[in-house]
Length: 457
Image 1 (cartoon, rainbow, N blue to C red):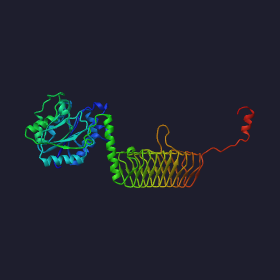
Image 2 (image 1 turned 90 degrees about the vertical axis):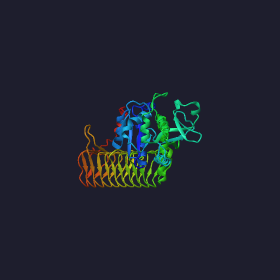
Image 3 (image 1 turned 180 degrees about the horizontal axis):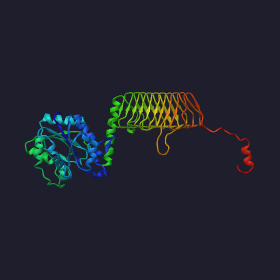
Image 4 (image 1 turned 90 degrees about the horizontal axis):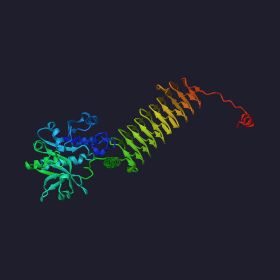
């Protein structure tokens, strides 16, 4: 909606979270709660967003940076008081969408419908309400015999009759700004909590002759997060939404209940995600891949046709038709080119692995550039650390590295070279050479029998 301002209340202490961090910076599917709310408002078309902050304000600002404007509520004296703190940042005319920073499940679709309803009905205030089986703790929507909204009564101030009402206030609204500003000057803290309720402004606006309405949303969307248990509940809902979105876009997820996919992850059609996978951050996965079971992939780019099982990939880039695992770890800043194989119990750290190269098993490659069509034998290691500094290993194309080889960096292995099994290489190996760096074998015949005779075996 053009010209719509959004005000997000995010100054609360969040005591029930039992955390040193502000409640609204706790994450749901990899994104902070406050970011979910800000993004929903932006999707409605509201680019003018004010966030009211208070408790640990700098942490909230660190998350949102300059994407929004800020108002400060140094002492938390109620929702009405929070809006008062932002009054000077609101224009004189138009509508303001008021949201709370701890309701990450609210969708832009519902907010668009709420704003549309508000405008079409000519309301001065439209309350986003919901009907709950157990409304305990929520303010109740009080209507007259004709169904018109009269007022909102907070749970602690409600009579027994009012507490029997199941339609509740979500604490989200659309309000006429001019009328809201007038009402804010008139609200008092004469209530059980000694706070300035924004709900009192609704009643004042009605007495001014303003039209009050309510638009009903699902109980799921208005769910507030006030504890770790509720954080888990919200996570479960959001995870289901994300997984279903990927499935609707052509991704097969074998078991959505055991699959965690972050909010910003992109997955192309015809990829299969097996149970137990955790895919986070800005990860992009191509088509025709099979991921899992039990993989963790963070901030990485995976090409088409890859097969990754029981492995961890962090902040790295994989090309097409690559096989990884089982039980491999690809650490940050690694690049794996097309048709490579990273096998079981292999660790790759800050290295480039060339096209068609095989690192089949029990190998460590760190701080290395490995060329095309290289074979890294079982138990081979790039020795990159002398206790103080890291050094680089460079391996050319078509190199064969035998089993149990130590390549002590800094060292270069030329194209088409062979490294004999069991060697410890400390000097560069020329192109096409065979490098052997191990002591000559000696066999002492009869040694065992002699030791037995002397009683030493």
